[in-house]
Amino acid sequence: MRPRSKENRDLPPNVYRRKRKRKSGKVWVGYYYCDATGKEISLGTDLDLARLKWAELEAKEKPQDLRLMKAIFDRYERDIIPKKGARTQKDNLSELRQLRPVFDSAPIDALTPAMIAQYRDARSAKVRANREIATLSHVFNMAREWGLTAKENPCQGVRKNKETPRDFYANDAVWDAVYKKAVPELKEAMDLAYLTGQRPADVLVMRRDDIEGGYLVVQQNKTHKKLRIMLSVDGVDNSLGKLIKQMAARNQVHSSSYLIVSERGKRMSASMLRNRWDEARALARSTALEEGDSLLASRITQFQFRDIRPKAASEIKDIEDASLLLGHTKGDITERVYRRVGAIAKPSK
Image 1 (tube, rainbow, N blue to C red):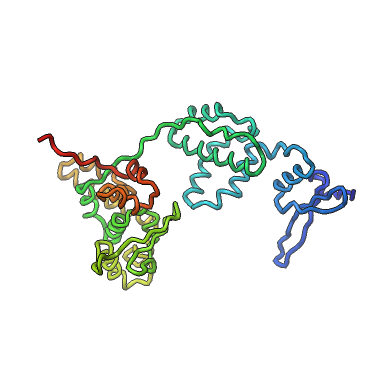
Image 2 (cartoon, rainbow, N blue to C red; image 1 turned 120 degrees about the vertical axis):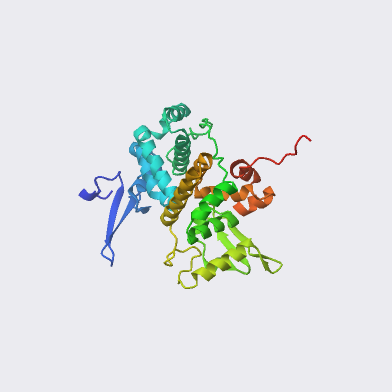
């Protein structure tokens, strides 16, 4: 067995560190296991993974510090979260900030369904607790894939807090009140969101070159679902086709390829949309109050841009058509979450 240098004394037995300086000036570090015959086996460049592979090769228990939830959260934050969408990354990091103080010091095999239920009951933010437990469940499943535990996921079967889906419906009175106060680019954003039934983030990134062969091609950021939304019927422009031509005419003096741009020709960002929305909604509310309609003013205050998607779903008569436009694979999601108007019934006489 080769003698161990000082720089390798922090490593498990028979594991050695190799360093090479690259042309860029950066130093590459790799870890190797030397078996009884003197053969070297690469363990990769990640020390934690190298220690796990070493434990497998030596048929030893995984190092205890790597089986603490703190180390598992660290690895999940480093290796898994960056592969997700920007909004999901932000949410996951927020959820880990809540989970860490409670679970960081716990060995993964110590987690039980009762502990998860206690966490759920202790959280005052009941809906957020459901999201945090869902993230913890995914962390645990990844730890199983990494070979850090063979236990069943303790989050499975734990009852979630009851959630009430948002059921606000923007009727024509509320829509018209805000629409009248909106600047031109906000009106176009509202119309585009309504006619396509897409999420605000997907509406903002629609471009002129997304129009292909008489269709507006959409790939949803959240689900990666692809759609082709018709712009005409039998060669005659439908409402969406007319809107896009109207937008193209207004934006022809600008160089931006995006459909929704500001009066200066800049692509509409989420914050720009939010500012314009808040201004239009505040003006609409003030007008309603001046006219003595406090109920309408209250409903205007509740109206959010994201309510346009369920408004579109609610006003399409055929549930299958609504589900297809929204990009749902199951119609019950459209019916349960996005249809916010009651069933049509006949009077008694």
